[in-house]
Image (cartoon, rainbow, N blue to C red; front, side, top):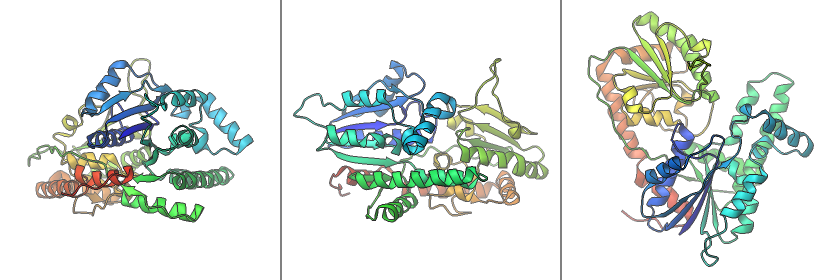
Length: 427
């Protein structure tokens, strides 16, 4: 089987949840015995070196003939690319093109993709075109034209239209009305694409159900998204009884659901924690923050306070969380699955999260994690973890069991093989 894989962002190094998920899927793909060749086509807004491409190839490994195509330059975070943002806005006004579609339209990308979709031998066309992220589905007409016999699989990291709906609820009139219209346009586009592909991959049962309902309501068609949960390898840290009251946070520091959660944690929860445990510390790590001219991280004022330290990106997550009594993972909004929750579970770090943070995962409060949307309740749970060794160990063991049951390679492989149209291997 020959697979062409296209994604919106070069997935190496795995700095955030989107890249982690893409890398997980690529590893699953190359592990399938039927897959003989895989070509990876991606975009980037920061140049990718030849060595990074080689590192990705080494990380994937396997006997597959793997070709990592040099990524094509394309703006991804449009707030940093005002010209592209203006172009997308103008297209929206003049042509009615929704932002979700217009953001990824590019003549240069289309030209590069046209070249790369050509098989090395005409008699060996691509058997599967795997579209990772809804954004790359803007090229579905091109894929269908150049690869008419290929099975097209769409990987959905989230229910994308939900982000637009959430954005609309945060706005005031008249911007709210415009945002609601954009959310409607996003939902129509998303449903149309989902109805047009041969198979849809969802990251969780919750997302699969939401995608199914979206297509039925908007297109009147029944689809059955296939769930491929993120695969996780457990590597728990030690949890001695004499841990200091050190609390950690890890996440993409520019993603709005994380930013909202951190604002809430630092401003509303943390003072309550310090009132209970004056010596408690909170260390915040993650990518996305800019640096000043002297090389210092530009930390939002709301994330500064007694006992709080922001250190930015860390290369070794396991080393960072070692010695922590708890992880705080507040999230407000978003969709899909929070990779930070899977990271805390695989590392065995007891975690307090919000209901939105646990969304998409069948986690139960006081079984695998502690859950609260109330500042006082969240602070109480963090303080409890700092002083209760038995609770920390119980949560760790339950979390590791949860991952073995729900996020093993074997479980994820079932959904992926069904998406690829391959038989399920018994055993």
